[in-house]
Image: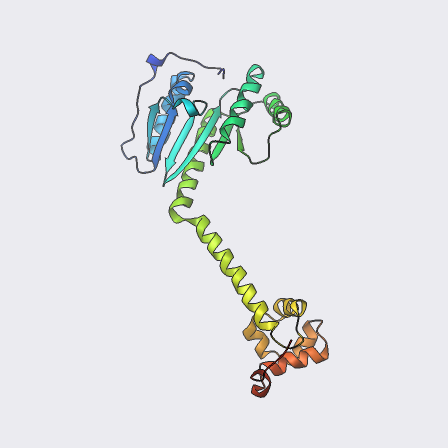
Length: 251
């Protein structure tokens, strides 16, 4: 991919390492680095240092030679393509990289600098022309280079925090518990003679938990649900009359 600003490798330090390095590691492709102005590389180094990231300039392995950055943060790896200048002559090459790399990286983002309306319009036309699928991968559109890199660091950091706290696993566990709770509720309430899934849902939405239903009167059930008088009587008796709820029942 052609870039707007190119400088000789000798003008850019071969390695920059932050004093902290606690935030994670940022690996930058030598190829991408060599196409940037030294002042931007200095900005990147300073920004990473301020955010406790260690910066390494590395020759990316041939199998992923089209990637520009890989961040390792909190046990999470995030890959980035950083397009600093959207050149019409390189559109097909850029989107070709995207199509190839999205199959190789679970966490891939494409950062593109679009400083003008013309550049933005070019991107929009190209996005649909090359059949991009929304969110696969995620495109991050920015006004300038500095904003683009700051977004990259924030994304990598967020991914790392989620990985460390195992947020995704926690959400899945909570969802599983919720589903299980709903299933238990359905089984308990539909064990009442004559009460089906619709009635159970109506009781859940209008009255609430099993405990709340057990305390609800026939009149409350009739007032707040579409259950018939006979069903409301059965529900009320089920939780109050031992002779009723301890006797064998056939649904």
